[in-house]
Length: 193
Image (cartoon, rainbow, N blue to C red; front, side, top):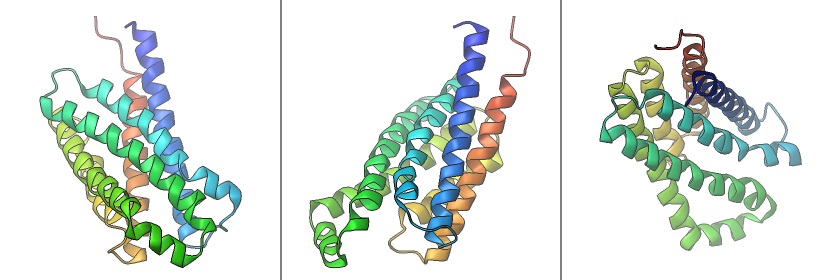
């Protein structure tokens, strides 16, 4: 891969991270009723995870030299969990939002509820393993710790107070912004000879 192409890919990954973080903040403001729930905010919600896929890929390629199997396992698991969360966000924002509470409860009591739970648990485990692999590869530690910690209340959203979920979403967005800045800065470093 040529250096200019690698720089472009890292910049695109950083941009994807910033877009993901921005949409996470929009979703958080919507949950806190700072922004109204509209068709646009409902349609935007799954884009946070879609952009996160590009961000996760960029982080992996930026940190994989000399990486361990832990990073690769975390990367693959993170991709799978975030892809599953795209589906979760579509269901929550574009299906559940238009159903009566009794219908939502009935759907959650069946296999959909199991799938939502599995996706949430996979998200937590994958994020922790991925953060640990990135940590070992030398990525900035504080945003990685914030990233991993934020996944617990997010993945366990059904069991935590709303304020804890909202705080975790803001922390996650901040960690993603920080890591995206790190990716962008890598594009300004002189190319290795």
